[in-house]
Structure formats: structure tokens, C-alpha cells
Image 1 (cartoon, each protein chain N blue to C red):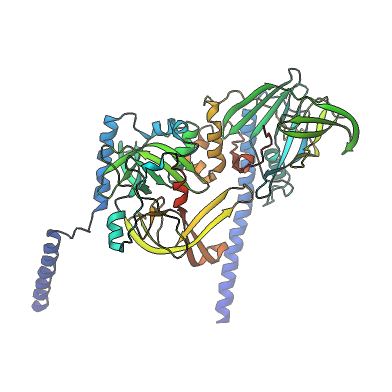
Image 2 (cartoon, rainbow over the protein chains, first blue to last red):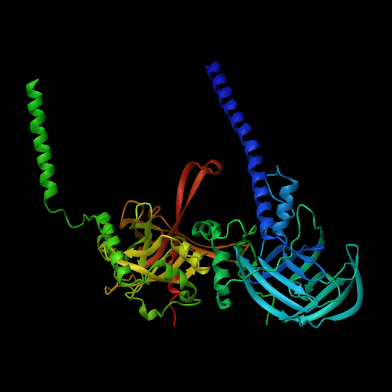
Amino acid sequence: MNFKHIIASALVLSLALGTLAQQTPQGKNDSSGMLSKMKEEESVYYAGTDTARYGVRYKMKYLFNKENNLTFKEDRMVLVTPDVSLDMSYEGIGEMRWRAAYPDSKSGDPSLSWRLTPSFYFYFPEDNRQVETYRIMSDEFLLRDTVCANNWTVTTDERTIGQYKCRKATLDKGGRHWTAWFTTDLPYKAAPRDFNGLPGVVLDLCDADGEIAWRFNGLVENLPDSKLYVKFPDRFSKIDPKYFPKIVRIYSLSDNNYIQRSGVADRQKGFYPEQYRPAMGLDACLIDNPIDKD
Amino acid sequence: MKIPVIRHLILTVFIEGTAFGYASGPAPEQYRNYTKLLDGVTAQMRDYLASHPEGNIDSVRHNLLETLAEGPVASPRWLPARHKKKLTPNELYDLCRRSSLVFGKMDYVSQVDRDSAYSTASAVALTADGICATNYHVISDVVIGGALDHLVKGDKMRFVMDCDGRAYPVTAVLSVDPVNDLAIFKVDPCGHPLTPAPIGIDASPGDAVFCLANPTGAYFHFTDGMVSNCTANLDKRTGQTRYILEITADYGVGASGGPVFDEYGNLAGIVSSTLSLYANPQQYRNFQMSFKQTVPAFLIRDLFAD
């Protein structure tokens, strides 16, 4: 009886080890294959696109639902070039860099908030022009194209954030009183969201009620193997923008399995390395405390 | 050797004779060949498309953003009056099966150069002029694709079929609630008003309920149970609340979107999902119980307002 047990246990153990032995290199191959495919798609999609000189990373925190005291957190970044800055989610690039640095890791970057809102805020300082776009899967939507009209008041207050000397500025916008800390130690002009118009790079921004804040979380380097592309969409969706709220509601609240099953993800395969869906982002949230109250 | 053979022959003739006699006679009325009814839907839908070339699922997708309401879908005046008399299960079945619908799809299969209709889920009629309810997940491919004007080759129709085999093509999606798994859509009544189910008062734990839906391989399948729980689950990540009416009446795959009635014959909810409880959840082993999660009827009622 004992002998039978020993034989059976040995058999089970050898089978299990054999399976594990087969799985590990296969898993590695899958992971590296996926990464190389993404690189290939990336090089096609971003061909000829300018890259950022550097990026500023922020922890964004927002009390979106006052009734239930719920806070949204997202890692955002502003990519900076001499001609344009771009505020977008850091999640995609952060996850890619984590996977490249830790190919054997079974979990993702523990420092990330795991939220990705596919909203993009471009700022062209020369024209003082702000453009807001949004990507759902491979469809780009043009939401706003306006001249920046932020009437900042720059004060004499100073503080240091990281290693950068910053100056305080205030602004009344969208029914909130905002305070920004910007630096001229970093080159060019940049700010989160549509809070542009200051003569430097904003490292900290919050409203007077402490409900919304972008806090400086370090700089992001443009690496040869992981470039920070600043790509303005080649074309925009022809769907009437008045329908955008309906579309974003459907895509932000639908289960990912349903989106896969609909076939929408397949139609631009090979051209969009990041087919974002808004379900992980702010638009999936039931907001009773809008950022822009007006 | 001869005696057993003769006995066998006699027995065979007797049994087969009885069987033939039974099959050739009229079957009791309650025995219905739903598969045959569903086979007739393909021809009905082909005829419909021939006379309504714009009545296909592509136009439902294409017009989705226009037809999708942001608020109520219709006036409550269009809803039928609530039943007030308590019914026996037999009376309930006879009454409610007229409002219960088979939800289906018609595809064109290029390999065999043929289109055919088949059932995928369930639904319920809400108004005589063709407003119906099902689950969001039943119709999500049309909604998600339609929102970005993405058309699918070979996908021709969505339809509902009533218990008499009459098919009604889906012509529009009126409202979707992905959080609560609810969709309201419109069918073309094709000159035959549907039999709508009245929306009941809010069911509470302990209330008797009856499910009349189409779990795979069984059409207009009737089960009973009671309301076992009413829950409101707040997702702290998103602030969205999902309302669940849990029942003990049985159902399975294919019943999605089918009606759950109270003992008066009013709509108490619609089938949504099951949630299985295992003693070893990591390995899905040692199954213990299955929660039957349905969409409470008040969410449908809220979509009818002036």
C-alpha cells in the first residue's frame, strides 16, 4: 500500500514538474513575443513622430463622488517639447516599462494606480492653443480646440518641489479657486489638463477645497527603447461630437469581454499599439462633483 | 428456440403498435414543438428583409446613437395595467407565456451560402407596439459596434419570437444600462400587437416568483421559487450601483433577458446571471450553491416617464 502511494506520488510529482518545466520557457516566449509585436506596431504607428524632451509625472487625486466619499486616483504625465506639451495617462508607458524591466514578474507595477483615462490635452504655446482629444479603441475624437484664456495671478510666494524652485500662481476657473506651483528650472512650458498659460512647468496643482490635485511624482525620461511620443492624431472620427457622451458611456461601462466579442478591437489591428477603452478611467465613474462646475 | 422468437414478435408488434397508435393520435394541447416554430422564423425574416431592405441589423447599428435615449424611453401610458388577482401556477403559465419571448439572431454563413435564424437568449414584451426588454449582454455586440458605426459582415438580424412562433424583427435599441445589465429595444410588430407584461410593485424577500424563459434546449421553460434577497452593491472604484433581485427559481444559459413574474402575473424582474459558490473557489471545485441574479423591475419602470 505504501509502495503504491510512493509510486503514485512520484508519478504526480514528475508530471507536475514536467508541466512546469514546459510552462516557464513558453511563458517567457509569449511575453517577449508580445513585447516585440507591440514594438513593431509602435514603430509603424509612431513613424516620423516627435518625441518629448522629458515628461513630468503626477499623482492625480480627485473626490469625484461626494455622496459616497469616493476618490479617483490616476498616474498622469505631461510630455514636454519646445513646440507642444501633452497631458495623458502614465499607465500605458508605466506598465510597458515595468514589463520590460521585470519580464518574469507575474504582477504589475505596484506603484501604479491602475487607472487609465484615454484623454489627451495638447498645448501649443506659440499659438496659446489647447486641444482636447479622446481615444476609444482606435477611434480618435476631437472634443475641444480653443485658445487658452486662463487668467493666472502670479504671486511672490516660493517653495521647492523635488529639487525645483517653484513660484505660486492662482486662478479662478470652472467655479473653483486653483493654486499652481510652477518652475522655470525645467525648460519649456507645460501644465496638467487645460491649466496652461504660466511661464514655466507646473509641478503641483490643486483646488482650494482640496478635492482635486495633481502632485509632482518625478520626471520621466525619454529612453531609446521606450520613447515618449507626442503624436497629434492623424484623423478624427467622423461621428458627430454631440454623440460622444453616449459613446463614452457605452465603452466605459461595458465589460471588456463584450467589447472583444463585438469585433471592434479587430478593425484597426496592427496600427494602434494602444487601443484604449475608458472602462479603467474617470469616465467609468459616477461623478457628482465635476472638476468644471460651470 | 421458436417460442421466444414468437413471443418477441408478438411483443414487438404490441409495443410498436401502441407507439404508432399514440404518435398518430392528437397530442394534448400543451405539447408544443417549439423547435419547429423556430425553424419557421428563418422564412419569416427572409420575407421581412425582402419587403424591408433597410430593416436589417446594420441599420440598427447605424442609427444606434440616434435611437438611444438619454432619459425615459416612453410614457408610462403605454404600459399595461397591473394584474391584481393572485393566480395559480397553471393560470400564470397560460397568461405569462404570451409576454415571454425567445430572442434570436439571423446570420449569413458564406461557406454554405445560406442564412439561418437561431435562438440566443430571452426577452419580454413591455408594450403592445413593440417595446421589449432583455439583458445588456444579450445585445451588447450591436450596441458596442453600433456606437462606433462598426458593421459586422454576415450579421443580418435580431428578432424575438412569441410562443406561437410569430417573429418580430428588432428595429432599434432604445436604452442600455450596462451596470445593471438591462437593455430596452423596439421590434416591428408587423401588424400583430405583442402581449405586454405589466410591471409589478417592488418584490421583496419571501415573495413567490416564477421564471418563464428559454434555457438552452428548452423553450418557454417554467420554474418557481421566491425572492431570496434584494441588494444594492456600490462599486467603490466607480461609484456605480448595481441593483440585484436574487431569486431561487431556476434558470440557466439562454434564459438571459427572460421574465420573472410575481404570483399575479406582473413582471418582478428579468433574468441576468448566475453566481456559483464553491468550497474551493480557486479550483472551481466542490460546488455548493448558485445565486440567481436578476434585474429588478423598478429599473424598467423608471425608464417609462412623461
